[in-house]
Amino acid sequence: MFPTFLDETAEEVARKLLGCRLVRIVDGQRLVVRIVETEAYDQLDPASHTFRGKSERNRAMFGPAGHAYIYLVYGTNLCMNVTAFEEGFGAGALIRAAEPENSETAESIEARRGGKRIRDCLNGPGKICKSLGITMDLYGHDLRKPPLSLEMGKLGAGEKVEATERVGITKAKESKRRFVIAGNPYLSR
Image (cartoon, rainbow, N blue to C red; front, top):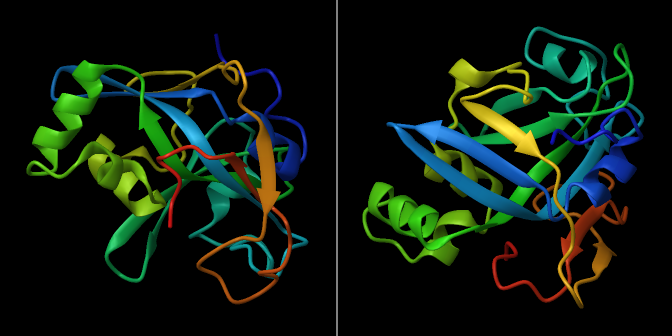
């Protein structure tokens, strides 16, 4: 089932995405990961790509909720946000870390990444895109449909959400807009 909360604020979406599943069909395989870390961004946030307004690069973030905003960072890595809130307001949640939902997904990702340990394949936003074969071809993709889709999920017994400062940015770093499943071994460094 597709999440029904994506029209909420970026912070609420980022928090509620924890435990949800990202499903990628690539090379005939169904890879399923569970989201364990996110960060919220919107057009009122100086650290957001949408802070200076709509552009060709960030147009997906201003579109309807539930689509993929994919962008290049440091000239080498792709990252993905799930768009949020209402159309016309630039908002989304960066998927920062995930864990494999099953051993088949873990084995397939490790093979795709040349034998790297599964945790090292999913503990960062660029790593997730590499491991799941998320490319710019999926820019603006509706996450209700294959080959990249988002499914409702939930926290496990005893899991709790923690809000922290964001990492890897220089502006508004102190904002507690990074959300994690506390203590999860797949969290980014």
